[in-house]
Length: 423
Ligand SMILES: *Cc1c(COP(=O)(O)O)cnc(C)c1O
Image (cartoon, rainbow, N blue to C red; front, side, top):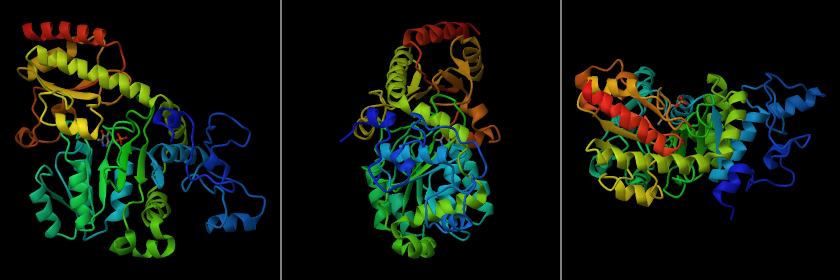
């Protein structure tokens, strides 16, 4: 059994066999110890028959970088080795990963179950874009298992979608219970685990079928370009899943991956940019070091803010209603984001403007500590009364904690709090 820190650096693909492609064994043609960046559109063939065979999936090779690319595949194989997922598809962004997963499961006339406590752009995608395509999101309070059961009973939902730790509320759920309940109704579970990266949350163990990740966040190494990931753990039996009947006939347990890769990714042009896949492969190698440091910094900052009588949300705080679940599901790690509230909007803005080290920027899980007002940045088009219903307030700040020295961050915050107080 190889531990995470080792598999982050070395691809040790459990499925590699002696006749697998060189990439499956992560061996470069020339022995380069890091997968080179293949930033090309097309691949040439010696013989027309070989291209014909590869096109028919009867032989290994790459044809055109919208259907597959060596650098992107190397990134996917590394993720497969780390996660023990059955299949992995790398996409242009986290939003592309969510698009790929939902359109591989749902078609016009279908519905799916989710909650409104999800990332703002995902919520917009569900409420506007999918709605206009005839796919309806049914919003349920997922803390309420009875409400979920009722929704499952009353619909032919094609998926259950939630975030393992939601952005920016930092709520979690009893994830095993959600998965078990969805499975009772033969509904696959899609979880966005961006805030609980590998080493913190084991999606397979908790019963998640399809995991989606914004690799832009911690995997990239910190702001190293956009990419996303879709992982199929091979748990779900697609045989009786209406929308994948044809794919099941062709490819059995690979039905979801087949549809995702051969149809939705290909036709919507969702494949990851090779340059970003290359950058994220490098980011992966230091993932666990950075996650440990950032989570430890975040806990110290949350404790500091709480000690100043500032209302602070962070799941690894004893005062958090999610403390127990955080211990059970996330190895006690609360992730790299915390939120806190100052007296009013003006003080919140004065505080942000007074910070020297901490930057005003909207990324999360970056190597640098970043701050925003979720009301301004995540819900700019949403009227304040609707924001209020979503639990978003103008005096609330979201701090994404990086890997700096924590004392420097505390000093920065102390000074800014003083300035905001007199503003
Ligand atoms: C950032 C984020 C996304 C979107 O990812 P992009 O790579 O920016 O497209 C999706 N889900 C969550 C939870 C996120 O934080």
